[in-house]
Length: 68
Image 1: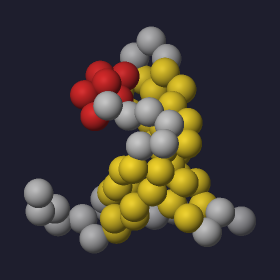
Image 2: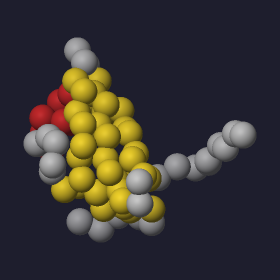
Image 3: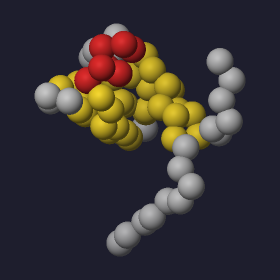
């Protein structure tokens, strides 16, 4: 599958926390960095996400906001 997104990070799922509708999925992308995404529970099930699964984190955003 080809994507227009250029920010693609390979990683490993470290945690899946399911709620009634949404789930939080944490992915270790190396170097001590963990990215957490909120997706639907249906998406977690469809993708077969579980701890230890290798995945790609794809970031597509029109803006990035930083605070200090």
